[in-house]
Length: 256
Ligand SMILES: Nc1ncnc2c1ncn2[C@@H]1O[C@H](COP(=O)(O)OP(=O)(O)O)[C@@H](O)[C@H]1O
Ligand SMILES: [Mg+2]
Image (cartoon, rainbow, N blue to C red; front, side):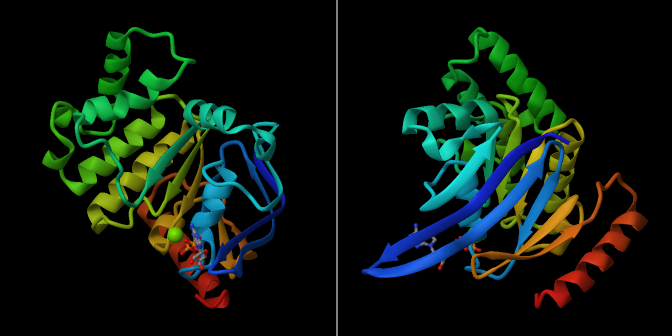
């Protein structure tokens, strides 16, 4: 398995009011191509910070982060922004979209901005529409972003995260603001992307979400204290229930 992402001795310290907060402490993490990794742990344990540091959205305090063979801690801001745009996709709990653009225009924005992309505007729009079709949101392309439901908006965010065919998708509580049905839909879309070869790292507090992932990391106080290899999930309600049970037992052992 090729390595997509690797950290060595990753530390992140915030200084607030002259007080030092060591949020990530010596994280060594390797994620292989095609993995779907869930990150769990108590609130404040550093899950989001980890996701931001490994995806180059935030700078590390010390340590190495290698993405696709490149040490991203050595990259300048501009190169990092290009790497994020071309090779990474992002999905957040708060569904950030541009208010003055339609849903479709939001989805294709990363492609329009990417210098790697040599398509015409029409070709890009066609790809955007195809993605919307795949995600079951054909009807809302022309809508304003406040004219769609939460589940639709999150699926639009997934479409946007895919538009540049990223190597890896980083999701921070992507289902956190959704009801069970929408959450399942969103997870099934992420799973299907993953089956097509996209590596996924997903922060979640929902064991039902994590049960669909191939590996679960458990973070406490800035350290990875537990790791559960689950194997990839390929459908089936019974298998899912078994996985949920296994994971819940393991989470209890972790002090969840
Ligand atoms: N931008 C920031 N500035 C200062 N402290 C921060 C910042 N972001 C996060 N923290 C602190 O880092 C710790 C971990 O936060 P976070 O990564 O958001 O945890 P989690 O996602 O696991 O809930 C918390 O103590 C939080 O207050
Ligand atoms: Mg968080």
